[in-house]
Image (tube, rainbow, N blue to C red; front, top):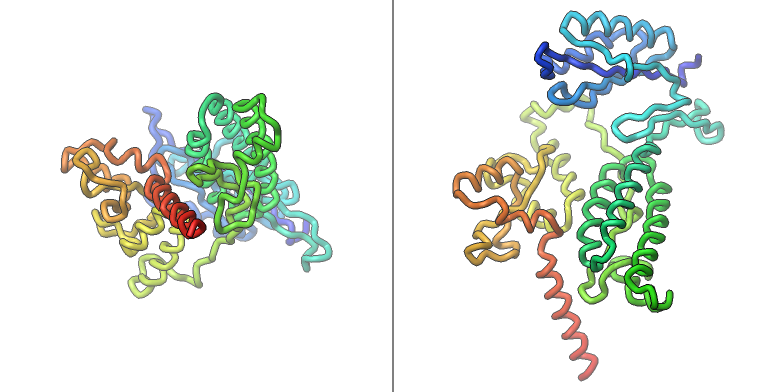
Length: 368
């Protein structure tokens, strides 16, 4: 087999004690040690052996190399109390492709655009797309009998999260396909709400140029408040930026470099959370560490809402989930005091009031 078509060896590593608990290896980096062999190009670790198994992806030049790596890994892991899952361990050719963490990795023929005649594309897997459609379908079924504001509150976080996760891959066509499917579901929803109204009436009521930065007349939403449903295609495809050379997060001389890389993750947050992160210079006010260390972020009210605190930026800070829990434990405040703000887009009421004020000002100018 040609060197341009690597073999893929996928290994699932489990470490289980007699009581059934999974343990974490003492040194995660040791997992790459036996793979520094001839024929094993790279190893990708997709997790830690804490509560979930560790996945290894080994890329080799030939099937014989892949089988040899598999046998060496089996013996090496056996000495450490680890085993390879027979069900999830397999050897496949890259032209067949394989799924990993929701993505499909596969070699596609490209005789005119690639020097080797093959191009490696990473796309959302068919299973991931189908799971997303199933989840959205269930949400549409639950939306029967609810108003459009409830629909937007249920769907936008799901769309934003899925699109942000897969926008680093080749997903533009898949995003557009999901948008077309969502339009069909939106139309069905309006027919259920207004079964006796004409098609043009429903379209005029629920669709329009609600997104002020886009010249799109087919944005579904609530024209009274200006809220709208997000589209998958609105999330631009952004490739992952590789780490420069041998840069290490443990090198104090590269502190600013790693801070800039972490700060770039702020674009995945909602606009209101991005503003809070910018006001805090990317730092958690509770622990002083970077906000972008893969921990869940939540909004905290400095002055409790139960005591008259409002949903305004001056009364809000962005903190880690664990830091948020510590703050409330120390002050004996209920965590639910901030829960409403974390379950929906921030400051919706404030934006609504601002839009209404602008609308009134425009009406006054027209009258004068």
